[in-house]
Length: 116
Length: 116
Image (tube, rainbow over the protein chains, first blue to last red):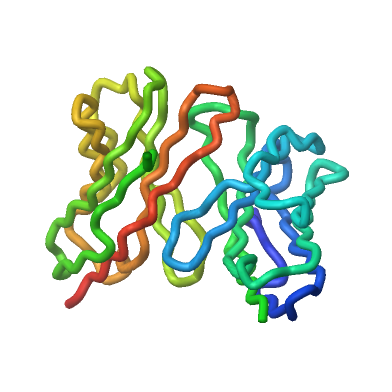
């Protein structure tokens, strides 16, 4: 059984460029989370999907950030007009069931985005 | 106020010794969950251990145990018999029930180095 995969693993973008980050969750997992991890910090929540529905996007830092999961499996996080402060590792996690106190999240290896 | 505080930016331990990583939390929810994750240099977050706020006993998972002191709002991770492969970043996280989204909040992490 494959784990959560993310692509690309590394992305260098020029300021102002649009980027798209992909997450392949574990097959059958209902919930999918995106996190942003700045250097020297813990992950910070960006957005959450249950199947194809985006139930919480309160962590998205600006309207330049957009996420989708159209068929309830693969998800894409898109950042438009990238800025230097967007440089971070973007982590994706999936879990088998919906919200709950103890629903183990399985994390991908992350995409390291560097904006020059 | 920080919801999760990890006061040790870095810790060193000799192989085979035990080490305690500190975590304090802040919540007014009576029901919450506490997690520890390990993040090696490869980037992905690995779940280690979970403690529910109503659990009577401290959680244990192999060499990992969680020293849960509810009144002090602390949830320290104890790693017994450290191994070289334990060198990594360690993050404490909390899930609360308020709002129903159960979005985890992470601390800033502690870097653990195990030396021979």
